[in-house]
Length: 134
Image (tube, rainbow, N blue to C red; front, side):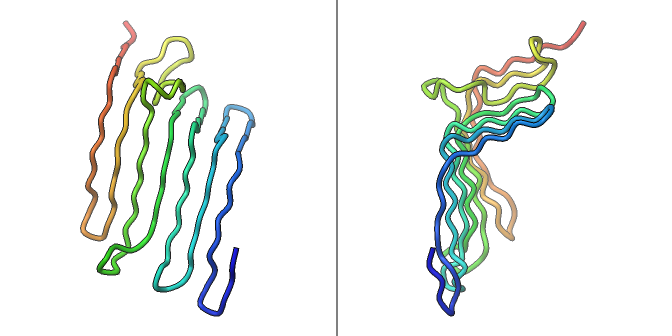
């Protein structure tokens, strides 16, 4: 990390694992970078192979969250995710009781761009299954 009169810039990397009752978070490859200088203000988090389980509901994949300014200096945020069959991770999303989920999304990828003008995105999901109780 470097600090000067104009701000700070740096990065951290490592792994994250949290296990408390009904909540599990794992990110074996986690990186955070930031720059607080006015001309280049930015923040980014990248997690590869991440998984989150809360009360039996799970989400897994690679995630990138970036915040910064576009070429015109306007603030923008990008959220991107991916969990493809070659990743050998858990399902992208599982909602419902353990063992008999209501919704399963095995694979997917997407990006959401958030600006003051609104939200734009592109999301691709495959293998989606819905099992409603009888």
